[in-house]
Amino acid sequence: MKVALVHDYLREYGGAERVVETLHEMWPDAPLYTSFVDWPSFARAPAGKVELFKSWDIRTSWVQHHWFIKKFISPLRFLAPWIWGSFDLSGYDVVISSSGWFMCRGVKVRESSVVSRQLSDPSTSLGTGRKTVHVCYIHHPPRNLYGYATGSDLQKYWIVRVYAAVVNFFLRHYDWETAQKVDYFVANSKETARRVTKFYRRESTVIYPPIEVNPKSQAPNSKQIPSTKFQVHKKEYYLSVGRLTYSKRVDLAIAACAKLGLPLKIVGTGKEEESLKKLASQGQALQSKNLGNVEFLGSVSDEKLGRLYAGAKALIFCALDEDFGMVPVEAMAHGTPVIALAQGGIVETVIDGKTGILFDTPTVESLVGALGRFGPASREKLGRNWENQCRAQAEKFGKERFKKELRDFVEAHLHR
Image 1: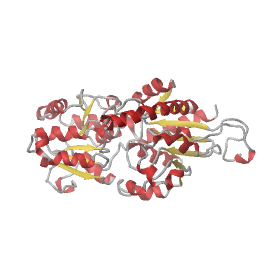
Image 2: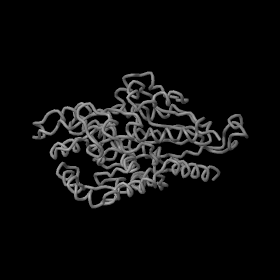
Image 3: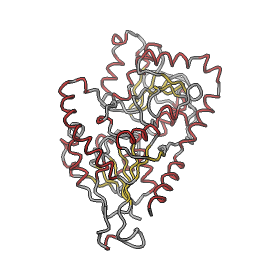
Image 4: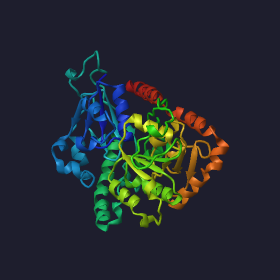
């Protein structure tokens, strides 16, 4: 069986890239097709990831040789039909696309039985006449096309709104057309499945993404915690993990922790990094003198991230309309509760009052209220139940479970 993997592009290392990494573990001989790889930006990924990805058979489009398009891929997203149309994957039996905002479902696959016998090897292929089976593991329909928060808050500029209105009109048609050509959708959450039904009129099977639920890292002491600005002890700081983009609303965590005088560690990089650092350094912006407790750690290795999860009092997660949210489950796998905005897939993973605290609106006041509910009295009342219930909940989203469910799904639909 000849398998090809497809992914939007490689620039940052986040949840979608963790899924691709697992897909490659399942099908190590499968080449990865992607629009481009931005190795200088990808170099900020956790230690060892760049070397790992460079060892793969990665096949890029013509965009790889155009730095301008790579740099401004978001405003130039109208090029998507030409980018993905340049990939002919008709020689594969199965194509598994890891699809997000850039609509990588548009690759060409074998549609009919008119195909040369030379394309098929009886020992490895389904044989002549079989169409390519295209399975799309969808993280979310393109957020910028359907009104969801994106990585930048550029819609506040009228010229951006006008440009987006024109470009997105045509891209919604392209997005619909490519969605109809997919044989099977696999959604990363019930929330994403609802969006697939709403925007594409297609059914999908929910298979939650792979999470490392048996971490080796134990709760650390203060010397094990990466820190350059202040010393903390076990369970005395709050943690934020993820891309530093607008939709993640890390600014709410900074403001709330500053207001309450709580130490906050921030892991991740992204286009909002400088503005968030500026926010954290300007006490007058938040009318607080407690901003010295905010520390930016950038990208860290998986080992260090595990120690940070295990040593945190709680994870603060404020993402808007999150499709699934792998970070909260990773935190719970380390026995750490989650204080999160109750939107999207988060309500499928975090149990309010048992594995964390949910708040309803993306405001500083609402988050401050949630932090109050998670105060000393609440922690003393539940004691180790927080840790036990978090680990038990995270067990439902294990990596081996993902591999088994997805492999079974592909094999079950291969011969239909």
